[in-house]
Amino acid sequence: MGGEAGEIACDPRGMTGIGPTSQRPQLPDEAAGSDQLPPAPSAVERANRLSAANMLRSLLPLVLICLAVVGWAAFRQNSVDPVREIDPTSTIRAADARAGYTLLVPTGLDEGYRPTSASTDVGSTPEGGPVALEIGYVTPSEAYAGFVVSDFADADPVVEVLEGATEEGSVVLGGEEWTRSTTGRGETALSRVADGVTVVVSGSAPDEELETVAAAVRPYSG
Image (cartoon, rainbow, N blue to C red):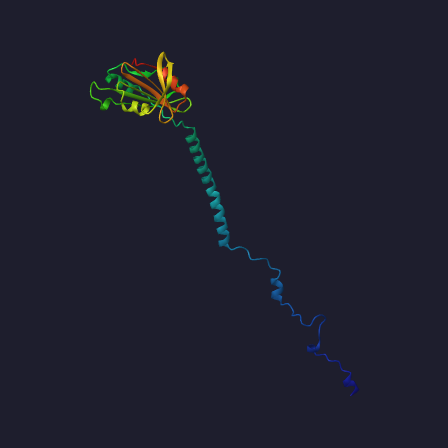
């Protein structure tokens, strides 16, 4: 009996290890999985990334070319002179051929006075009727100076300028006396009448430029 009481239980189920008894032993698969790296990107993901990068690289030269073209077009547009200069010679000759008076035109103006328009009413005037000639200039100050000559005092180009104008004295230009007026638009008009021919110089140009045009008026010599 005493020997039985001294027996030690050897059943493994009754043995406990050192440490917390509630800790679950780590399985071999779990231990191996904790050391694994994140999965590598798939082939599709890599292809998508490469496609986007290639697209950006291929578009960059095209964008640069477009910007260069736009910049060049803007540069050319800004550098082009907007004034379209014309040669009034043929119009002057047509008026001179039909006019029953000595045609007067500005002569010898320097290159700063650029003709941009010229017209005559010879096409609508019967043979022997009054003839009007108009020439428009862009002046050195980039303003406008208009010249009109007609042997009809009530010609439309003359009336358009002088109707309602206020006379403000006279000035001698090119050896001729001109009447200085202020038009209904507030612009200066220089006019003179000789032998039934009315000559008018007016526009938005400064007075000194209008006077330069008036002083240059001479009989047309062809």
